[in-house]
Amino acid sequence: MNTSKKTTKTISLKNYGISHDNIKYQLTPSQLHDITLQKGMGKEASSGALAVNTGEFTGRSPMDRFIVKDKVTQDEVWWGDINIPFEPLKFDALYDKVIAYLNEKELYVRDCYACADHNYRTDIRVINEYPWSNLFAYNMFIRPTDEELKNFEPEWTVVNAPGFMADAKVDGTRQHNFAILNFTRKIALIGGTGYTGEIKKGIFSALNFILPTQKNTLPMHCSSNVGKNGETAIFFGLSGTGKTTLSTDASRKLIGDDEHGWNNENAVFNFEGGCYAKVINLSEEQEPEIFGAIKRGAILENVIMDDKGDVDFADTSITQNTRVSYPIYHIDNVQRPSIGKNPKNIFFLTADAFGVLPPISKLTPSQAAYHFISGYTAKVAGTEAGVKEPIPSFSACFGAPFMPLHPTKYAEMLSKKMKETGVNVWLVNTGWTGGPYGVGTRMKLKYTRAMINAVLNGDLGLYSYDDYHIHSVFGVAQPRTCPGVPTDVLSPRTTWNNDEAYYTTAFKLTNAFRENFKKFESYASEEIRRGGPQRYAF
Ligand code: ATP
Ligand code: MN
Image 1 (cartoon, rainbow, N blue to C red):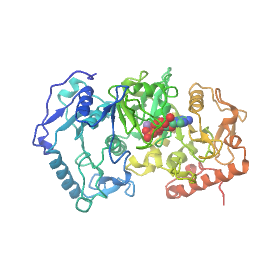
Image 2: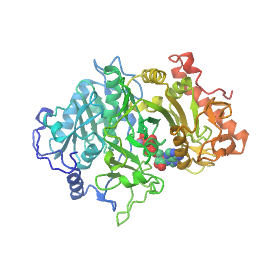
Image 3: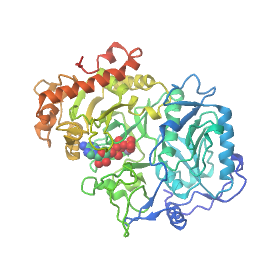
Image 4: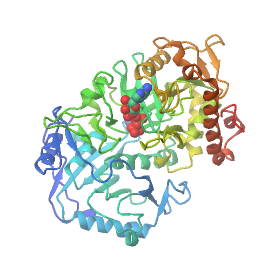
């Protein structure tokens, strides 16, 4: 692996319209770390990691994500609030402005690729204004060997100019920041935001269009790992539900923490070469692997450190979305290459802040399809005094912001694969227990891990009514016992100690499910509709 060797290759960006040659090409992580410090753009944490502030934006900005509407995309993309159209001519004009801006700057360029399965390999060139954003690209995309770099011809280019501010009226953006995908020119154009997640999610969104439409492969917003006997598990879930946390498990080899493809050759492959973990309240005791990955080469984002460089992971004064990115080899137990066989188990992770979904339950195929299209999790209300009501949040395919096609396209592909493989699907509530947010508590990570391990070790076979109970509201199969987990915890109703409040809240949630599902009803078969909750409040 090309981790420390200094490459001497230089590069011209004339074909992009960059006329100067002040280009730092393929610098090592160490060089980028040092340059960031020299420029005063970051600090070194006591762990050795680089700590940066991403500036105005500490998360993605979904309302400023556009797709150029042209011959390639117009009839395929599901246009709307998520996939907002952008005019080709406006794109060309804005691109030229960004390039003119970058033409005045020293630039950091990295050639890398996405997709561990080389049949799907997508070569990418990332052009960054800032050195630490280029280190992020090193960490997150797959690193080509020196040999592979010799004749490297990028297919896609990410142009990343955090310091460039758009003029919304002239440029056709909503405000000064933007992330625009152009499938004809194969460019992801990002400006006005330093949030690094836009870089990885830009390419993810591109693959979410290309793989299903051109390569008959299902892209998934999921993490993945593999057990000792080679069996793969995948974990779908929206942000903060536990994809990264639960896939990083010392007893299983990590395939990837966020983006995978499931091809027709019976394999699941990672798109990326690194992980991007949330670090809010991170502790060495609870999450030793992630904690240990925070060392030189890693980038901490928007954390607070003391004078000695010790990070206070509980400090959310910049944002709740504090993060660390690191190359996958910072984790000890990883699968190489990042490819696994057809999964035996799929987990849908949800952080149910209403606290009414069972911590683990098994889904029938129709329930699995229903929950995949619904993509439920809950947001906890802001910290204003008195506001404690959870807000249901539905995001189709557990990743709607990154899915350019209609959700039913992905759902149909997944249903077909589930049928072909007979995979087991589980719904895991990593959210609240004993009451809703504000009353109950977050499910203990060690219990969630115990439930998942019980499934993976075959200790949670639900064969007869003695083993499980059908939840009277959600209709899912709730195990009665699970090794390593107190029996009470398995039944959310029991943890509430107040049946009336429990059912009232459960019906609030099923009503939200029903309301959300209306927009899919006309597309969904009878079989999928049957997979919804069994009871609603009227
Ligand atoms: P993203 O898509 O934004 O990367 P993610 O699905 O990878 O999100 P994680 O980074 O794993 O989400 O975040 C889960 C957070 O919830 C972590 O901070 C983790 O420590 C915390 N957590 C608390 N309890 C649990 C639990 N029972 N299961 C999983 N995570 C938990
Ligand atoms: Mn994650």
